[in-house]
Length: 567
Image (cartoon, rainbow, N blue to C red; front, top):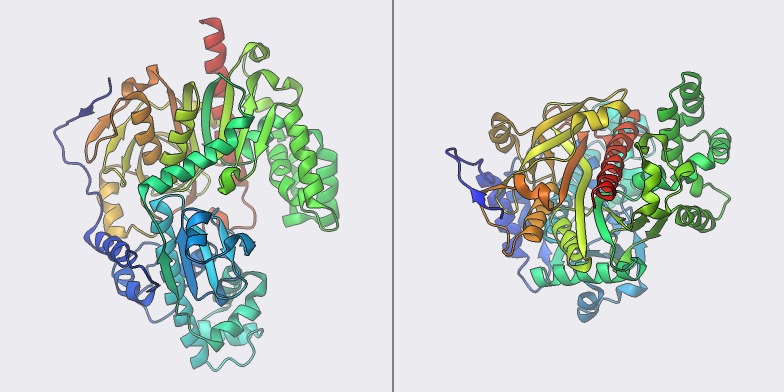
């Protein structure tokens, strides 16, 4: 049995008073059956002191906060006046919104299903309460900074928004113009004209946000995956992304390197062709392979070619390698892959995942279910949907991005303690992964194990005062999924729901399910340095992503081989 344990020390505070007030404010207002004006949320947002919006109360625009928000909203956002949130198409239809006929729109920094009516209404699917905690602060920050920018541009009497010199004079320097245009994307001139023409005055509405509907949504997602699952097979569950394990195990990029390199030479995407040549010349095969993996998406979408045909070619190759992809099952934007260990082709595997005796995997009946990691509490719902849908769950492995309070972008953090804001629990567990599993694949970044992680409700819903409390207690990793996954792991092993506001030991949990959690640093909030997602290219990001994924694959292979040796 796994029991909550008591120790003679006080747990960290679950939140700060100002953050609590902000959360209570928007959940209270969203209970309304009608539209809620975002201006009603601005005061609570301003005084929350969010570390991602340090300039919220300043009269000058906070371009970092605006860039972060704009990157997580669709390009049509300047035309939007109303955002409607719900959990299923049925709820939208009941509200008179025929979203099936609307245009699918995406963002650069969030995987959230969105539909646009072509006018002023945006429909956003929410997979858990975390989507609300994420979207509301983003929209509020966007509106605040849009209007501050508008006021500054109007005061400067900008006549031509394409005049970078005039914009630099209005915003303070040329670097501000670069950041602003990066935030607005290729349509920056059109959006700036919209900004001068009207203020941002948004409305939001929540149609439903019940726990039951979140569970139904996750169940619908799993039911769309289940027909592709071989029956009665033990499962290793991985939450990572839709490309790392597929690239490492499917082999398409390595087997088609000449085509991808030829594409890079034709287009020199992000100046990668000479970087690939330099890696080959230096004998750095790992970096060269990582560049191929990174370039595959751009290769699929090469101008003048049919992207769907190339994508089908890649998926058919991967399927022949034992990796079947299921995009957006159940119309939920959490892709999945089913990987049969016995069907893997050894000559197509990345050399970094080879372990002693790997040829014996042909005798295994186990499969890997890899999902594109969900946001926040959606992780709990999706894990529980998988756990109730399979006969045996042998391992749970989580790989994701995190902010680090003491490392650099591209470093890797492996935690053994996680404090979860959702449950207010502090989870203690034995991590199946250690630094030596990843460090051999890292040339630039550093790997830190034995860390303590904080699972936050939202990137915006924490401030410097709040972070200082945890930092003094040794918490250096901030992320959004580990806590919900650990709550799910507790319920998979126990006949009761996870507790609340307790210290919970999962140390004995490894006897039932192998448990590995690993993060790579994408942000450094104390220094507010540029995040990994906002850079055009980062060797650190490629290296740490595939270093972590290689460690997880090797752990699964080794565990399964041990089972074959000791049935």
